Amino acid sequence: MVLIMLGVGLDFALYPQQQLRFAAGRTIVSILIFIIILLMRTAWGKRWVRSITFLWLLLPQIMITWMIAVTEGADSIYYGGLNLAIFTCGIVLSFGLWQNLIFGACSYLLYVVACVIHAGRLELSGPFLVNSLFLMFAVAASAVFTYFNERARFMLFQLKAEVAQKNRQLEDVNKNLAQIKGQMLQQEKMVALGTLAAGLLHEVNNPVNFCLMAIELAREEPEAKSSATLQECLSDAKQGMQRVQHIVSDLKIFAYRKNEATAEKAHFLFEKALDTAIRLTGHELKDVSVTRDLPLDTLVRGDEAAIIGVLINLLSNAVLAMRNVRRHQYAICVSAQWEQERLRVSVQDNGPGIPLENLARVFEPFFTTRAVGQGLGLGLSISYGVIERHGGTLRAESALGEWTQMIFDLPRAE
Image (cartoon, one colour):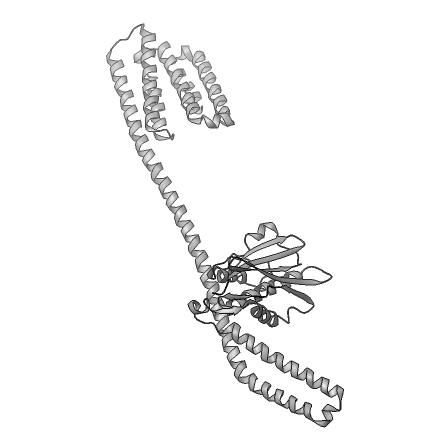
């Protein structure tokens, strides 16, 4: 539109007697182009954008044809405007090869029509032939530009697709690295716990056994037998020592990792693993009601220590979530039932629930809603991997403001 209106200066220099007519023609064509551009912004126009673009590009060519016809015909210098439009389409616009050839052919036909209208017949004069050759050269050059532009655009598209694919691969690699990092952190934690358990077994078991023997001897003394209060105190001390033994034994089971291939083929009672997990999280489960609904047979196949770790993680998460809301009674229910050859386990709490936008992300590595420094966001991700190694799935269900339920399944022992 700007180029069309700037041509007024050319009209003034070459054909001042036609200036008003040409200015009016230029204004009308510019307005029509503006209307067509507005039309292209509509839903209908977007569907037919290439055809409409072809139409408004022909409007200046039609205008130039009219100017050639009313001025000097084949001798008119305005034929250069046709060349300019053809080059513009080939170099600037994203026309295809055939579109550009058709546009060039239409432009040349319009030039021939203009020469015929001016002379009343087709004259194969020198200017006409020279201008025709230049127009054909312009069409050929424009077609070459279009061909290489198409190739360049296609290569750019390919490069963008390859970059997008590499980015997706990089994201997958980053996720794998995050999972590996989480597993390494878990392994380091397990090694530390194993070292601690070994030390506890050696350093604590002997004095605990000595204390238990001393308590039994004390209970047999006449003074102890004659005093109900003393007997009760000795019984409490015995229970306390036995609890220490249980804790050390549970830490041994939880921390000493077997070879994965061997561990995942071992048999264990899920009920026993649950007891161990509850004892190890006993300090967190104070004032929390833990109920269970388990079948009589809970013999499953897998890595007992890893499953204890999963249960500890689920119980700890449930407790932390429940502490964030006020409840008359904090409650966790662990239930299980056999479905074909798998034991489906559910751990449900009456906490605040999980928002819908976070429900699908809770198993992502390093995703956490806790405050900075209160968790890495690896627990559920690692637990998901543990259950996956056992051929099962770990999923979350929740009702916001009411409850959260973690469900996983384990294979039946052969």
